[in-house]
Each structure stands twice: as structure tokens, then as C-alpha cells.
Image (cartoon, rainbow, N blue to C red; front, side, top):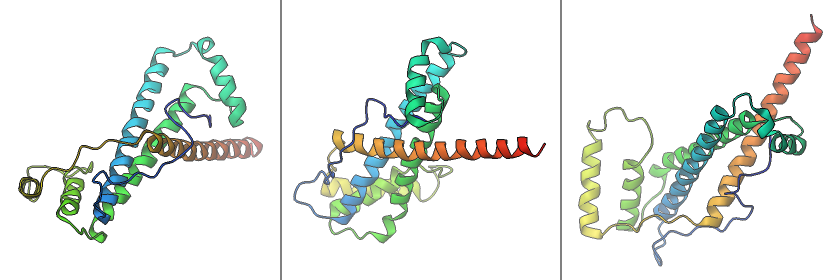
Length: 200
């Protein structure tokens, strides 16, 4: 699989700070990491959708993309096309979303030390991308109501503004991990096919 990153990726990471200056609350750091993982997963989802669209448009027309495919194949040691890049993008998105879910799961273990930290924890709970069944069932409307009340008393959190360098670095990390995974699966399939062919 191609180990080259889409143009939106870079190789450096600047650690993101919670966006409330002067507030040092573990819940805000957790929310910052959670928002970044979700944002990167959405970015990777868009990359995946773009590749999916290209695959649908370019079905069977390998001449248009052969130079890119050969370049990526020579770098990765495997012949790849849009389908290979699509598989990597899909896995990278899954890795980023898995990271967001892991961070969500740590919410009960992190103690907020301010009202803004409590608001941050509730924002993560209300904004979670899990299948919660019917969002009108208890306790979801009640939690959203508590969150609204807290915001009325303590104020809104500032809007999330992802740091471009951190976003690129995180996306590149998930992309590289996905390349390794897809490459390992392709190698495993090739070995299995070779073993099956020899046993005939």
C-alpha cells in the first residue's frame, strides 16, 4: 500500500493545549484530545469518500492513474491503485474513530477540577458518536438539559479550532498505521494463496 500521505498530512506534531487559556483541568485536556481524534476521523472519512468517488468514476480506466499507481506501488513494494488507497483511508478512519471512542471511555476516570471541566465532560457525553438507540429516551434529554443549565450559569466553551500542524501529524500517524495494517493483511493473503496453490 502507498505509504505516501495525502496532501493534507505532514510529519510534525505540536501538542494542542485546551482552548481556555489559564485553565488547567484534566477534563479539558481530555476533551481537546477527543475533539482532535473526532476531527481527524472526519477528515479521513472525506479522503475515503474522495477515493471512493474516484474509483466509481475511473472503473476500468487504469491508463489515467497508472503513473500514480506505479509510483505508490514502487514505494510500498505492492502494486496499488485507487482501491488500495481506499482500503488504507478506510482503516485510517477506523483507527482515528477508535481513538476517539477510547478517549470517551476514559471520561469516568478523569476528575474535572472546574465548572468548565464538567461542561467539557458533558459535551463529550452528549456529543458522543455512539449508537445510543433513541436519543429521546432517558437519560439523554436529561443530560442535555443539565448541560444547557450549566452553560447558562458558567458560560459556553469556546468553539473548537483544530491546530493545523497537529491535525496533519495525527492524520499522518493514522495513515501510516493503516498502511502497515493493510500491507500485513495483503502479505497474509498472498502467503495463504501461495500455500493453497502449492498444496494442489
